[in-house]
Length: 435
Image (cartoon, rainbow, N blue to C red; front, side, top):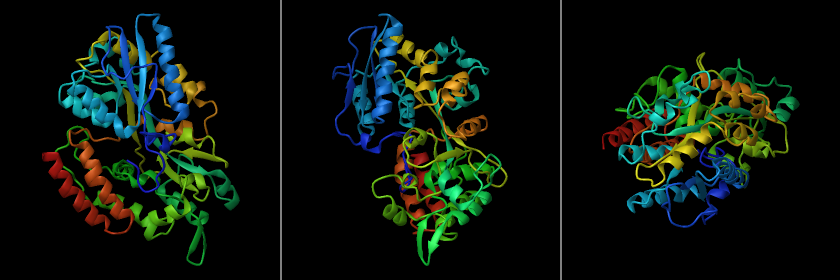
């Protein structure tokens, strides 16, 4: 779901190279996909690079120790581009994995009746208590309107990252919670360094505004959205002038206001690393998962909540968690793992700093905040009014890969206008919604 040089996706937010690593990474597991007995489970997730993969393996060890023989888990990590194919093959062979990590493609498994209704289990936990968990955020996972089919254990959102050194050098005030996109553009103008037609430093990069879910935050702020609803949408509403205005705003940052580099300029600046990592971009709106990767940057940086647009701020969020197939042979052990990840493991997740815990006390507690950049707390606070950054439809993958991706590539390369892009998404997207 990345745009042109837009950083790391939520599928792999430590090392993009790790996703293309080739062979599967395994921790104490065999090559078959089914479980051998009723208390042994196979846990499947995708690889995110060295640190996060190591933490995942440590999670499995901690779970096994906590279970004292009641349940035993093994872990397999796959490159993302092999992940869903492997899961589908296991389903086809009637040997599904016992537990696997959620991404939006798993919604198709729900539609095929393959995954377990987890609401009866969740009802027996503190996940139903608003004082302990962000219960409002769980609503999109109630695919049938009342029951949850995934067991959440983490949450992510989006923020504005900025290079403090560049701000200091230019004498520009840091972004804060009061900022609007007008403030961001004014700062970007002061932070952009040009000599003739050549730009050596950019005030901003469009970052994850290049993605459909990023630019849609501007539409949300105006009181609209790309589709009529995120769960089983019936129609695209891209012909809404507010949606056209959202796309045009981002395109204009590049080609009208000249505050952000084009994809071609980005490639020239950031040949081997992400563009924010080069130190030549002052601001970068992107997913909060980039915190893990940015810890090793050689300049001072921080983050802030997304700027307000037309007086409003609405950030996206995504839930992470676990799906349990109905046909799994170790149902109780699989449930134990998902429940333990969402409850007992939450303090350690906070200490690891790779995922953001779903339990409120751990998400905003001292362990999570320790060592985090300034502005992290404010970015997490956006979850109070955030909206789900996904579309749940059987053809989601086609919509993203065949409609959003190619169309927005044309926009950001200035091949088509915002209005033409909206018309294109409207036509092609509606055809897939009805297919």
